[in-house]
Structure formats: structure tokens, C-alpha cells
Image (cartoon, rainbow, N blue to C red; front, side, top):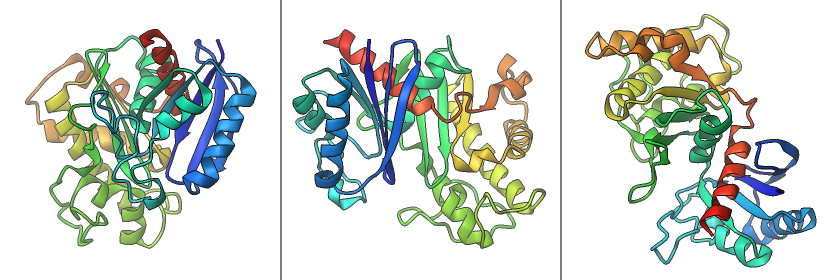
Length: 291
């Protein structure tokens, strides 16, 4: 079966063709311009490839309630050209095939839970830490939507004792994203996460914030695996620091086999940055079965 996959990001659109085994045959990237500029090229690509279904993992906020008149829309995005745009419905209309639709981070979570380190598990969190922070959450085998979808990058965090930076988020300042996303690191230290030298105190502070958020996710959602992706998490020295601080913050309150083997519990993304595309392939397959 030929399945189209679209990882729709605020900066770029990644288009791919694959199959039900998760194999990716080809992919290409184009810039995210306006719908008038970007949509025709994407529709033409998937038509030419003769895909039988399409899965979309999309930047948001988006509407995922199938009983809502705006299901399939990008809604209150700061990318104004895409605000209130029916992206999933346009593809469905133009291609005439089943279209699966979810958030980009839920797509990545689904990819990891199907083909990656979390395969076979039913309770998984995938967190991306880059330009922003978002989480895809699977509970008992189902992606979490609720009345919108998780916006787990915006929980308010306790400030690090040595941190004087006000916070980058224009809405909350001291939320997880405002204190620990890539732009916050650059604004605080004057250089990007990629440019910060190894051993710099920035990495310790970043790990402290990430671990604080993970403690909350662990206590509220009880995941069987936590996967950390995104550009900031390419700094692999963060992982042992995060694990250390999670242990400190939990402080023995809960004891599980996962926390006892924390190196296998809190892990980097395992699919070579293709977890989003591979999750979109699953969304496409699911759309066919639901039809």
C-alpha cells in the first residue's frame, strides 16, 4: 500500500511516501509559505505519487474533534496565513482518499510507539524540545486529545535558583517552553544550544528544567517510556543530567521498575528524526481502517 505522509511544520513541510511497514521510499522538504503558495505543490506531489491514503501530523493548535464543524482545521496559530485553514479537508477533497490528522508531536509519539523504542508499549510520552516544546501522549494505546490536544510545553515551572532570565513565552514567561526551549536558551546565554560548549552551566540548568517537567508527567501520566526529541536534545550530555535530576525530584516517592532502570526509561528519539513521518504513515493506515 502506498501511503503519503505530511509532517506539517511552521517553518517547513516534509512530504514523504511510504508503506504500512514504516518503510519510507522518498521524502522532500518545502518551505511553509501561505496556503495559496504551499498547498498546490503538496497536492500535486501526492497526486503524482498515486497514494492511497494520507497521514498528516500538523503544527497547531488544530481541531481534532470529529463532531466539531472545524475538525481538520488549523485554528489559532500565530502563523496568521494558516489561521482557520481546513488543511485536512482540503487534502481529502483534492485527493479523494482517506486522510488521518493529528498533531505533529502525537505523530512522532505514534511513530516511536509503532516502530521505535516504545514499540509494544501502551503508555508513552514523546516530547520535542526545539524552537518550541510540545508533547505527544499515548495512554492505554490511544493518543490523547481531550477538548483540544495536550499543550504540555506550557506548564508553569519553579525557577532555577541561579536563573535571572524572565522567560521567552509571550503568554506565560515562566512555563516549560518559556524557560527551556531553544529560543530561551539563546536569549539567556547569547548563543544557541548547538553552540554552547560542553560542560557549560547552561546544560545543567536546561536539564534541571526538563527533569522538573518530566517529574510532573511521570506522576500524572505514569508513562512506560519517555522519549525526548527535537534540536536541543541532540545535545546528548543532557540525558545523564536529566536522569539524575528526575531521581532527585522524585525523591523516592514512587518506585517502579522503569525508574530503577532510568537509562532505558528516559531515552532519545530512536528513528533518526523520521519518527514524525513514520507516525504519519500510521495515521494514514488508521484513516483507511476507520473508513
